[in-house]
Length: 297
Ligand SMILES: Cc1cc2nc3c(=O)[nH]c(=O)nc-3n(C[C@H](O)[C@H](O)[C@H](O)COP(=O)(O)OP(=O)(O)OC[C@H]3O[C@@H](n4cnc5c(N)ncnc54)[C@H](O)[C@@H]3O)c2cc1C
Image 1 (cartoon, rainbow, N blue to C red):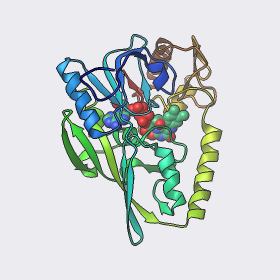
Image 2: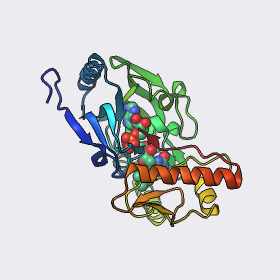
Image 3: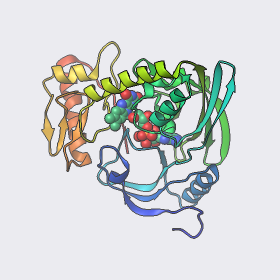
């Protein structure tokens, strides 16, 4: 705990505890602000200490290097929400720390359609807004109305979805993540339409079953690379003969070649070596340069 801050700061916190890959060295400081005021205080403190700051969510799309990060990593944990109904439409305001899949289920049970595709999607609302998370025919850009942001660690603004310049797994926010004080997503406003809860539940059960069938068991970050235009990264890596390739305890999944699975004691260097191998082999064999979907810290 730091005397000048209203929240707990953990020192040398292993990021392996906060990423779905279960790898990653220590953050010099780690915190979990749960309100805008706590986030503002933390950003001011980091700035005063001249420390770089990174906002994260649930760490399901992150690779933290083994040497860690010599600054502050903060996971925004606010989870409040409110729903405003207007006839057959509803607008949800939800804070960035709420789980994406849990929110989708809650809405579907209430008979609101629009987020069924997010059944089983790991991570929180903020991460989905930054990366335009999507699957099974939907994406965040398709349901978001506006994002509430904290700019420069102090200025609260609301940006309409059009200002986020969404594309496939891309946004203007994702491009700003390496700024010294990057934008923090505080909340999102989403629009939904009324539907039959039973039909929504059936659709989500089908998605859950398909996700279960296609997702390799074990710790991962989901898809490592973005799909190149008109193709799939998994197909290219498989065609390059790399399925099942292992470095240390990291393995290119034999079920889905765009997944790298931590078989137990992998370190970030093992995963990075597999990433480089996949990239180099696919470039050499097919002339395609794969772009990372996952963020490396
Ligand atoms: C098994 C598995 C399956 C997956 N399947 C899919 C899939 O089908 N489709 C898909 O799109 N993704 C998928 N993913 C990836 C991941 O679930 C999404 O990218 C998710 O949206 C990341 O959310 P997060 O909260 O974990 O973000 P993090 O991984 O913590 O962060 C991701 C990025 O967003 C930034 N960020 C996070 N929260 C905030 C915030 N509040 N303010 C500012 N910046 C923030 C971080 O700095 C980082 O750049 C999968 C992951 C796993 C492990």
